[in-house]
Amino acid sequence: MISVNRELENYPAIKRKVNELDSKGLFKYVEVKKWFENVENFGTPEGHGWGVKAHKIIGENLSSIILKDYMKDIK
Image (cartoon, rainbow, N blue to C red):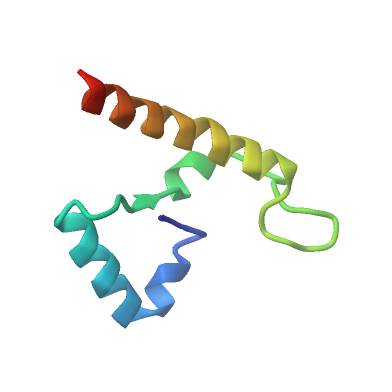
């Protein structure tokens, strides 16, 4: 699970459950804000928060996390 621009903060009950499930290893929560530090203009012309540039950043970073976890599990 990823959180867009810390929006999870707006839903404390969901945030608590996410943290609980993450701490139990039932899924992985990833805060992506740091991936966008010093990155500008990653929205769309229509005003969506994430455009092509943002999805590329998310894809590259998530694929690294997924691959790392996958490689750990198959060893």
